[in-house]
Image 1 (tube, helix red, strand yellow):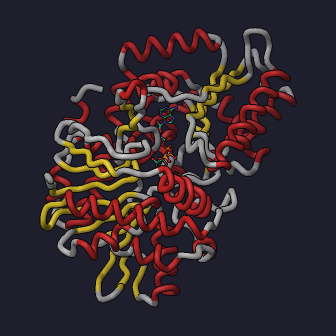
Image 2 (cartoon, rainbow, N blue to C red; image 1 turned 90 degrees about the horizontal axis):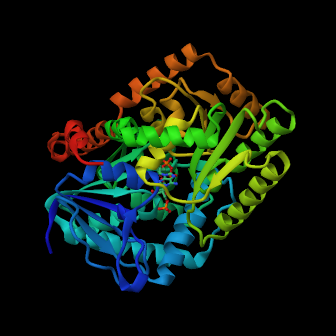
Image 3 (spheres, rainbow, N blue to C red; image 1 turned 90 degrees about the vertical axis):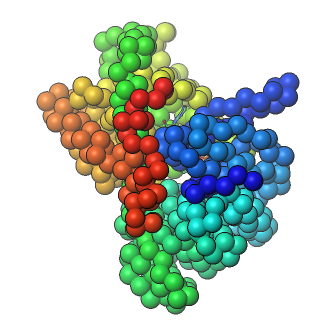
Length: 479
Ligand code: ADP
Ligand code: F6P
């Protein structure tokens, strides 16, 4: 078994095994914030990425991606159901997102979650050199830090939570709350998107584990667990360069012609997830059409909703409701050859997303709760000419950084309508000022800065951060 000095452990590998046609193996880029963020920094890094390839049954051996080794973890159908669809995405996901859908507490899922976390911990332990750093990602693997510490006390262990960490009163609902908290605190450094999360964890640790400490350090079993906020970001040079490519520009021009050269384009891009606020957004848009405050001849909406977690009941129901609503809105307000909303339930490659971002006059990102939301940052990175308006939910982690967006409470449909109109009618000079300020912020706080800050905080020496590619090298690689 080849070993690395840096091992990243995430539920998904950066490639999705989309296999099965005639036994052929076809890999595609996994959608989702975590894979997008980590792939940018790791595909040029000598490291090992431990993760699930997206299929069921025995794991295939995978070729290296440049200097990055991929170490697949296999899941059976039952494990997929109990660990990924069950405990991770039907218990933790809704609970960590303000319980916008009720979390399901199924006692059968816990054992599977724990067994699969153990398998990830074992794969990480096998892949790590003596004294290596292992960086565990997200709520799927919350037990891994402690399991790994038991297997390999020599390792430096980091954990980063990409989703929000809930307020204590919600976390306290979890039947296995103490084990989950202890599992995560097996790390040397626990990173979150927002400082509030670290505060919540310190409070819970004091209550459930009797620890002492503050928002930046917790004393547990004679060990100091450091905590802190490290807001995740995107590869800004990559998206900016992509959006400037002549082929992307001409695609954006063609999209604009197809959508209506004189129309304002309102765009949303989400995984099809109930946390993303798609239904609230459609209600607001439909009421603006109903009240005649926007007209189909002047404005067109494009809603990209990439399929996600389709075997989970809540997600199937959501898709049905959204598709019915889009059909209703188009039926009531569309004209022949002129729909009110273009609805695209499909994955896009990066260049096509960049072309869509280029086309959008108003980008609407209105999750009910989101750890960060990288789509908002991608839009800003794609608008190098300082045009376009970003409407952004106050409940996305990105709102703390993108203060110049048109911020909105997505639960307040009337407020959402007024904010959409404000963004559509904004003065170009005001838009330019806002966009410029937001781009300056993300340029400084991009994915390279995020990984560098986290890893430097983990090893104190900067040694780990030096293994990562510098932004210039990232810019030079083919897209
Ligand atoms: P989440 O992690 O909840 O999915 P984010 O907004 O943080 O939300 O990240 C979503 C990522 O998935 C972004 O990098 C975005 O570009 C990508 N993405 C969104 N929609 C699509 C799509 N239709 N096809 C491919 N990638 C997509
Ligand atoms: O950001 C939260 C997250 O669960 C990530 O871990 C993942 O990249 C993304 O959402 C997509 O979800 P899934 O891996 O379930 O398709």
